Image 1 (spheres, helix red, strand yellow):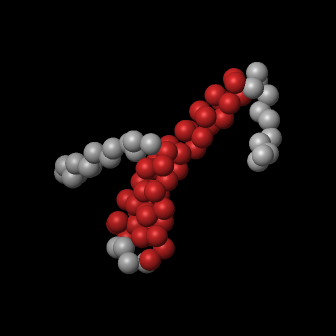
Image 2: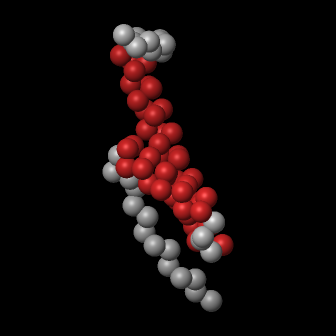
Length: 78
């Protein structure tokens, strides 16, 4: 028995795009209007988006550490 092909899910183009999609997804999940099968699919997409955002934030943090000679400093607004 062949399963239906999974749709190709594109990676977000930016951190901001992923964050926006994640916010919209959370709103749909919280609405309670999605069928169970779609809930699972949407939850999986949310997990992918969350990982993308975390990875991007970690990469930026690593870049900041390099710029600050390996020491992550506390940011204080001026």
